[in-house]
Length: 187
Length: 99
Image (cartoon, rainbow over all chains, first blue to last red; front, side, top):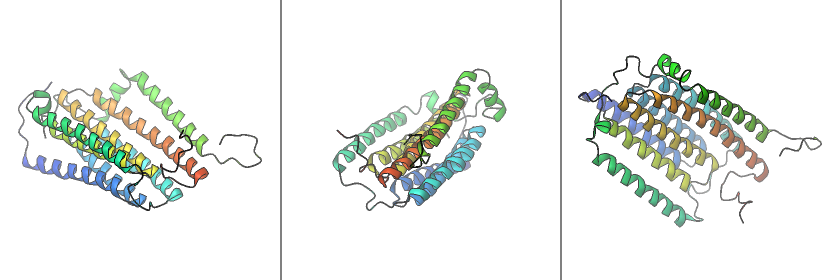
């Protein structure tokens, strides 16, 4: 663990404030927009700002992946599905069962408030207070994370590729258009 | 920035995602909220990874990202499939399995 003292510069604080404000604003816009296209665009904002936050954590590889995978691939997928099934909701929040849902949100809010309070209370403990860069030289680069991925985590890596294959086949099977006279009965 | 600031942002983002899952009834927006929750988890993993100086957190964040891609693919396929049969993406109207 790296516990060397590291003073946070003003520029660092400003970058962090702007990026985390972008993340939270994008998240709030995502769950409040009535039009799904606006929600997807807000989600892109969230993920772009989150990639910036990853970069400030010296996670360069993950920052690039975040932009490529989330802001690129997954968002394109969402936009395509929104184009196919675009239906605006009459009201953004359902009235049916609203009390139950609001109770759920309040309970979740209380849990997260307590967790945030705990983190704020324990912020002087070494693990939470450190802001220094890790001592490892090429921390978070493609080569060092990739080396770890192909040595210690080779089996999980192959398992996740199998999971992606299953997801691809499942996606194709679920959305395959079956004609009336066709013999295969999938859907 | 110290680690706890990142953890607070991660908690807030996870709460926003949870609120979206609870409150919205459009299946697409609920899926997006789940993506927000997964992203919040990734942020916490990377923050603790830096605090500990251990890159295993990056590997797990990578796995979470792959998992999110798989989840989005299958989830959106189910949304499209439900839309074909029910002509709706509202979760309140998809209640065939309700007892």
